[in-house]
Length: 285
Image (cartoon, rainbow, N blue to C red):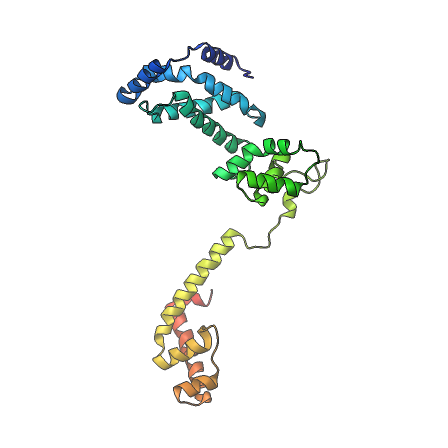
């Protein structure tokens, strides 16, 4: 299970460590909690490393180095020791089991795939239990369809059927690189070639946004050159979502629609002059 020599030595040392009696464990835990006695902490950790090794063995089928799992479990063991309350009537091994398992599971989720999966409690339960539940449900008299299987698993774990289907697909196939050639000779197109997006590039999006903001600031500044009636006509004829007609504005302002047109033309000329005067780069933009 452990390939390197250092790992085998660690396993032998852990298995040779004596079990702690309840009273001894309680005394060591108090010394660590109250006085931060490092020796007491070491004794607790060494006595419970067999728990870490046993837990690592259960997760070895995920294809990650068992030595790495043991190291992660050791971190969980230290976290448990830091949080353990010796005054409660609970053995340290019972309390530490959750922390060791959680530490290993987090490590597996981070490293099992280069594609990051869900980290919610429901997603974790699905990741670590789907294979077991699938194998158990498949032992029935009649084989279940994927739809029926997903329904039963989703009910058992409290997740959606879609989440079950997605996780099943992830667990059934390895990750595929977008740079992997589609042809076996390695000289053909890559998967990436079929994922070309018609959307503008990020730098183009940012550039357009900056231009819009700059032009809006120019226009707001130039509108200050208009009088109240000119400004109202320009806003309702040029700047609104629904452009008002000359006749509608004429009725509202008490003038003819031809007069509205004349004022609009004059206002547009004033805007152009103001824009060029205040921002010479306007013509280039």
